[in-house]
Image 1 (spheres, rainbow, N blue to C red):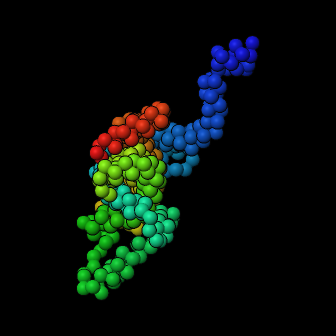
Image 2: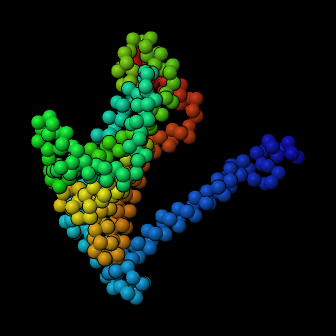
Length: 331
């Protein structure tokens, strides 16, 4: 009887291996699902509900507020200030990918080579990422003042300084420099981890075929680093859409709107909490959530699905075929 059950794939408990795995996955997923529902879905539902009221945040909105329907959402979508903040946010999204991506790959290529002091440089380049946004924002805010350290250093070389924070023509690029300085370390470490997972025999085969260093990186490293690059890009997009701390700390509550560095998150705080209109702020939060969700799902559907599909295929077969393709391309 037991032999017949084993051959049919049915355990004595009456569950097949597949059903048993699904049951275990479901049970283990319950804590994460509860936290996701409690800390993500429920707040979004509550914010969407509050967004239908003109409410100052005191008491219940249906008692102490005024029901306005979709008026808050209509104002958001037609407000030039929100459109400007949306444009700045999308600029940060694209600029972060364009600036940090190539630099991170280049630094990772260099730091993946064996040389003296490599571990120290890796640590130093990662330090800004682990430093609090409050510390980073405060430090750069002091250094970038008209009488700060940056202009003082430039003056010693005979270069005139600038108003790095308040000048609308410069402020957005100042923001991009600070963002890149802080977050590129994470991208570099992620790229190095991806490079170290590439089999060495592919590079050895390429050397035999006469490929130089840069040819190897172009034909082997970049194609096989694709999943890592796409995952980093996804994380960078989500982080850029949620950008708030650095802008709020460096540019303050109102300066960001005049300096050209306002984001959707700073707009939400300015028009919601600071204007004492929590119903409108909740509506802005819902709009930000919807925009982020649409972008994230679109990116995942178009770009990342093939990586997820590839992870479910036979690894050995994929590795052999991938190695054959890359080696033939180098040849």
